[in-house]
Image (cartoon, rainbow, N blue to C red):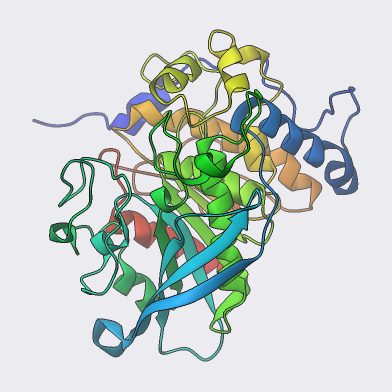
Length: 407
């Protein structure tokens, strides 16, 4: 049967209706017009960071010193192309030692003439899914049930190497990049109402803006950046963060709150990340639905907007704007309407005026591109055929974007 219209074509013909009252990122709470990058940096940027913590993600805990211990190193991984390591990153937070280290798996190209750029991000399922090396650790904390080898929410060695297309380490190092990833459950297992991980270390509180799960994961990314910037093989000024779905929300938040991150790639991050809270698209996830399904991801205060997201003093274009002038790429799939691909494109357009304060261009496209075409402007956009997943084909797009902006 001839397919007369692609999914993207349908989206372009009938885009969802957006609320007209998106907050202007260049107007401060007191009505002050922000007309220079200096005023943005001094007034509006810290104001927005405070608002996102107060009303959505909860408080970003202070940075703390980290120490690292080598668990495993193979200097001839992938046929000699790379050095593969797994390190334990330890820290003390809220006066207590975190009971679980972050187990960071790191692959570094051996054929290098100096420090290399690096991708970093949290993963679903544990490092062992993305490597066939038998010495890469299998997590022993709570695990998502759907991943290979998992039984009774516990990961098993049977899953080893079963998802190497999701974090294709060999491809990434062959392109001249290092790559580092860790299981998000090392910081906070992704289930509510259980005193474990980061949540167990927090002082008891009923505060509406207490640190929520996505913020804790972003904080964990920052600690991995601490480690990476101290490694002589890594170029500390060329670090990119990547994440998919809820971990895409994490990647965008981590990039917005840490300027050491030079490039941000949230993949299919949708509501609570790259997609707008204000929308009238029945096929896209909304604030009430996400807060009901995943109450631990966001702060208590965010739930006050379940039935009135238009009352939020910001929307997600403001989170992208906090990354200015650094490159940010939103990537999507045509069948993943739940993540609101067209709404994400709108958020990039609405963040562009902040980039222009820095004398650079933001999103250089007026309409969504067709499937498979990368908009590689500083605020970038890409949509492919298919569904909600992170694949090797997605990584090829990340690498193409990074080649432009990190090399």
